[in-house]
Structures are given as structure tokens and as C-alpha cells.
Image 1 (cartoon, rainbow, N blue to C red):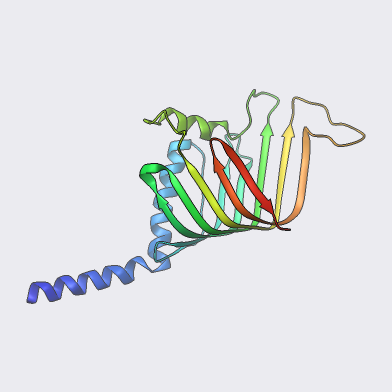
Image 2 (spheres, one colour):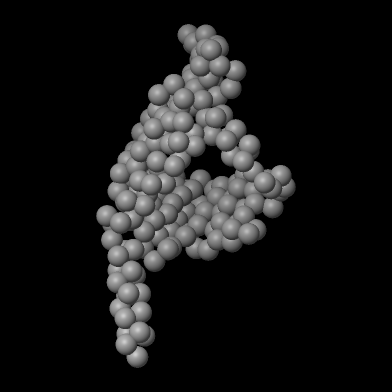
Length: 193
């Protein structure tokens, strides 16, 4: 009986300890340190809060490109997970909210590929499964607020008149999407706003 009581106390303590933001942030720091070493760029993350394994909140995620410029910055993000099946690479997300995101895609003058290629290369080189044809990523609601996106192809000169598709900067992006569906066969979303 004594052993059962102590085991129950330890389980309850661990359940509450895992719920503390400071422990979750500590674990997130360990993950970002690992990713920083894996990608050889200084990834940083502010606060992390995970609730009952179905809601994740974090802030101040920064991922630079290999030249040290911003590739991705997210001021705040939350994810409400509906369900996922890692063995079938299937993720159903109830809701994702992005606030203050900044995505900067660049093709530097000295490079032949975009500045995020090093991340794709790392995932592709370490993939044991070459058949990723069955993955599914579905988001019921995606909300983007106060965000910006830029694309800069330094191989091309700027266009003086009209739309310059090689040098795009969109700011103050506020949008809502429903039924986002990403799989090898389809990229689909309904724009709400």
C-alpha cells in the first residue's frame, strides 16, 4: 500500500510539473538547441505552453537563414490539435493562429537555391522513408494576423513599372482560411477573409 501511495504521489507531481510553463520552456530550449546544431543556425524560442497535449502556444520563434538574415519569425502562435497519427503521417489540426509572423524568402546573388533549402536538404538526407506519398495535413481554421511575407530574387533586376514578381513584399497580412488540406495530390484552402 505504501508503494502504491508513493507511486500515485509521484505521478500526480509529474503531471503538475509537466504543466508548468517553465519546465515546458526548458524542454523547448533543449529542442531548439538540438535543431540549432542540426541546421547550423541559431534558432531561438521564447515561452512555450502545452495544455493536455492538444493545445500548444509559443512565442518569439526565430529561424535565420544560413547568412544570418531572418527566414522565419513568429511573434505568437497557437495550435489546437484535433488528432494525429504519426505512423500514417496524418495530422488533423482544429485551429492554428499566427500573430506577427514574418517570412522572408530570398535567393541570394551568390546562391542558386532559396534560403530555406538547407532545411529541406536536412530533412531529405535523414529520411529513412522514401515513400511520403500518403502524408496528410488538414487544418480546419487558420488565422494569420499582423504578418508579412517577402520574396527577393537577387538574380533579377527590380521592375520599375508594374508588378515585380521577383521582389515582393506584403505587409499587414490579416487572413482567415478554412479547410486547409495539404497532401501530395492536393493543396486546397478556402479563404474566409
